[in-house]
Image 1 (cartoon, rainbow, N blue to C red):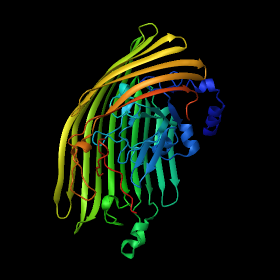
Image 2: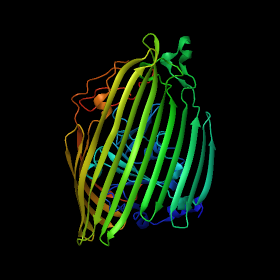
Image 3: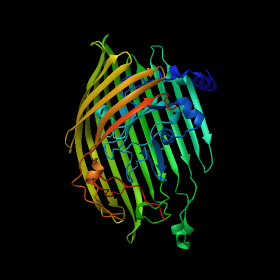
Image 4: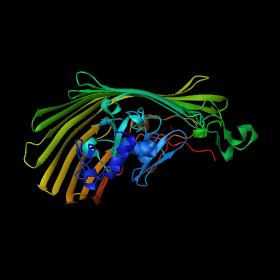
Length: 488
């Protein structure tokens, strides 16, 4: 089937069939968008191609209740009008195929060119708004994003894709999707993207000594992505690796303007193994083991005097395991329970001046996080379902948190459901917020008294068709790497 025919077929589907779209994010198992205890937004691969989205931030910006901003360095996600300055998407949980992608250092969800998976390999993106800690634990504060990738069958052979555009932008992708003689599904892809970027003009620096306010050649963005996935007989193995090198034209954090040494590098690697099996006809088991590494390195040029390059380095490493059981043994009940554990083996933060070498920060820590959850989907009547869930979670350095979830879903007709929902969420302070204290331009605050943030959410509504580094203090809310101040 050609892509054009696929789009036409999707547009011609009756509303009843569209409402049977399977989603997995709301409850950690597959259910239709209509019966899920959430208002799920979905953007499919066809939507991505039709609207020409180039990265995950553009996909999310098209969803109801979400908006995205960009400061020429990072993309920031706002939810329903709320976007705290300095929040690196720590209040939204990012999953890829159900596996947590927020790092263990900044707790950030990367959604721009630092996201390590080419959008051409994405089958769909699901977004569940509202508190989700009863299901997923920390960071599911304002919502949960789940990026579900394609498989080898969907690519069906080798592909080469090349793009070119203005400001020196170019992209080259090679991918291979196949099914072997034993039924194993294989996908591997490598992508290289680069852009020179446009020169940026900032009126406040409009003097001859600062190149008349023009940051020349500093808005470049170069990224490399590697993705591989194998599935056979219930076992799935996944590798995702991404590297980004980005210029900083804004002279963020009171830097020297238009200095070509101002730049940052993000490197991330994720490995995951998942096994799903039907233990009994009424009992399914899903087990995961995954590990990750994230490193951030930024060079910032200051005139103390003398003119000095300050380097900021953050490194996080971790491994985690998740186990979930889903039982339908009890009549009219779908009961699920499980446990999640993460071990933070390395959380390092360094800050130093290069010449002369001056050490400003050397913070190192380890830790862990544990969560236990249970939830029940109880069919009170053929057209009325009660959803109830409870999760206890604890992370090193923070007290334990108990988060409930209640939902009542009534099927008004085959295309409309009325949903009454209640849930809570929490977000403990991350390692950056606890440890980052550097006496450099931009200011520093004391972060000793940080504690977990919490929220509760109530919602009632009808569901129909789904939609295709410097800290600061803010009213007692945990501090973050602040968004860079724009010149002028």
